[in-house]
Each structure stands twice: as structure tokens, then as C-alpha cells.
Image (tube, rainbow, N blue to C red; front, side, top):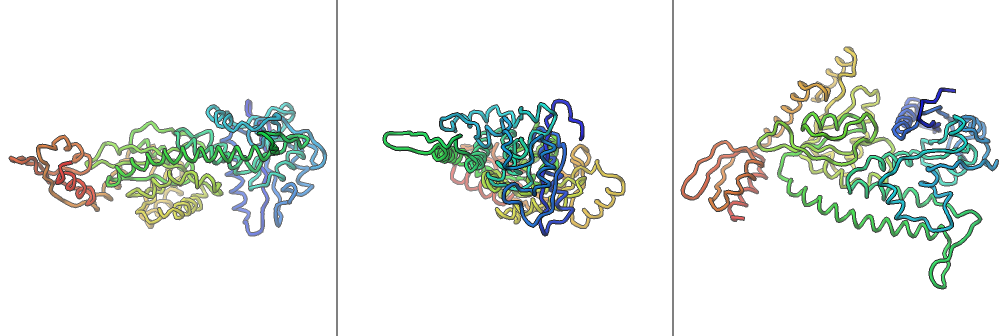
Length: 471
């Protein structure tokens, strides 16, 4: 059995290879899940896999594999063995299995998200050096999760639960926190369990309501409240987006950990978070390209994608993805050092296709070229040339400067020349002109300034309307 890394609990990854899934795809899925588990703060002690026509209805795995799994966790290996449930925060937060005889405090669940420390197991398995959590690379039912817990004595999460928890940890802005909390509550609701002994609580005059029903109703009410708050925030963001609609905008999109945030830093000089972890960035950040151009070019860093991204999270982050839909140019950032980068690109394209962003002009950017050997790099350059793509390392200033020139050239091709008349009465609006278009020359007469400009047709038209109305 592998040695445990000091200070980090252990996990076991479980996968079932179903018909139609190749060995390579199955291995890729499990490798990616292992990275997710590592991001969650666990070392992967083992991977248990099995070929089956379908997931076992009761416990995902067959009896033999279930016993093999239990050897890593210290459990009995049988669903009906009555293995004691390990006490851990996973169960308290996700399944609400060991709650008091009172309603689940959904408000407290929300408050706890402010200082959430992730899933930490502290039961018998952890004390003995065994794995304390089992992570399944499939969406599993609450019954399957409960049976696996009985057989293994460890906490159980499926892939969706892991991703939701990682999103929860990394959300920073108000919008992202609300979006993630909605997704978490949607995940928790069907996994709530009855209090031990099937007790019922009575709330209100003359009416009885089962504990489970009460908890689920309170969660539904909380989700409705969060959605109302989210709508208000998104309306504010929509106003900001409309104010930028005729500006030059570049959206960085791609698979999680492809290096979008590193590229954002390099292009804009901003101090956005950069970590070698999955889903380090969940909040859309908008900064100006530096050195600044005339007109200014805005660059936005967006949430990354991943295979089997939970539907609730895709829906929750729809407004974040709208930033890509409204961009003038999308840069598909690809981790060229990852053997799965073509499949990852297709995942990105698929998600953006769902919101119609596949129609936005785009360019491929093969990042992390510094991690490739000479032969790999040469092959990539040939591939990129055939696809009119760019090969770079976000840590190479020359590469970043070349990308910056490519962005400017793209926008230059869309610009036109025009003239603006700016009355003296609205000279305070000249700043808007210099921010929105490039001023080629300016002259003054008795009525005001006459400017020759170059910029996007929409920006020039807006400025003409502004100065014609005197607003």
C-alpha cells in the first residue's frame, strides 16, 4: 500500500468502464478525477475499476470489487454488514446524515460557505492510515452512496459532488458564491436522509410535517431567495456589459488549468489568481490590454470547462459564459503539453456551442509550449500553422508580445475611418472619444473640435449620436 503524504488524508478513486467506453477514455477520465481529488486536498491511495454493462444498482461495484475497495478503507465490504458510519464533515455538509432532531439550518449552510475548509474525515479510517473517502467517477444515487458508505466505512462522493465542492472553495465574487451555493443546495436536496428512527417533527399549529420534507422545503425556499439575489446582480452586470458593447473585447476560454489566468496576467499586467489547480478561477475578470492601445482593448478571463461538468453548474454560470458570447474575439487557450488537449478543445467548443458563442470569431492559442520537447514542439508548430493557430508560453515575453500584435491586427482589419464634430459645450466628453477610438488628427474652429478618427463602425456611430444630441 502506498505511503501517505504527510498531512494529507487519502482517497480511493472508483470507476466502472461501461460498454462503448475505450480503455484510453476510461483511463483519461480516472486520471482527471484523480486531479480533482488532489485539488480537493486528498492523496489518491488507489484506483479501483471494473468492467460492467451498467453500474450495480445497489453499490456501483460487484461483490468482489466491493471487498477490494473496502480493504483500502477498513470497511467490512458488505452493504448489509452494519459497518459503522465514519464521522466526517463530508456527511454533515453533503448528506446531512448525522443532524440533530431539528430542521436543517439552510441559512447556516450558507454562512458556513464563507469559511468552508473542504471535506475532512476524522473517523476510524483516518486514524488507521486507511483512505477516508471514496470518490466515484459517475453520478450515483443517494442509495448507492449510502450503501458504499456502509460497505467501506468511509465518506462517499461522486464526481459531481467533488466538482461542486471545488467550485465552492474557489468562488470569490458575490455572483460566483451565489451560483455555487445554488448548485450545492440542488446537489444536497435529494441526498438528505430521514432522522434516525424515522422521527417526525411537528411545525405549525395543527399540522405535521416529516423532517425530510421540511428540510427540502426550506432548501427550495433558500434556492428561490438566492436566485432573486442573483438576478439583481446579473442585471447590474448586464448594464456594465452594455456600456462596453462597442469596445474591443477579447475573451479567454478553454479547459480548466489550460493557463488562461497566466495568459491574462501576461497580457494585462493584472494580479489575477494563478495556481496549478483545476478551477482556480471561477470569476470573470475584465482588464485592459497593456501597453494600452487606442482604442482600448479589454481582455476577460472566464471559468474553465471540464468533461462531465454538472448541468447545474453550467446553468448557474450561464451569465459568466455570456461574457464569451459578447466578445469580439475568442482565444481558445489550449494546454499543448496535455496529451488530451484535442479532446479538451472539443469539450470547450461543445459548451460554447450550447450558448451560441461558436459563431464569435476565434483563434486557437496553444499554451505551455515551454513544457514540450524539441520533437513535440516542432510537430505542434506544423499543426498550428495548418490551423492558423498561435504557439506560445505565457511565461515568454516575446511570445506574449507576438500574441498582442496578432490581437491588434485582428481589430485593425475591422476598423474604419471617420470624422467627429465635438462642440465646446461637451468638451468634457473628449475622454470618451480617446477611449473608444483612435484620434488621427484634430482641428479647432469657432464651433469646437473636428476630429479624424479610426475605430469600430459601432463606436464611431455611437459617438456621432452623442455629440449630435449634445448629451
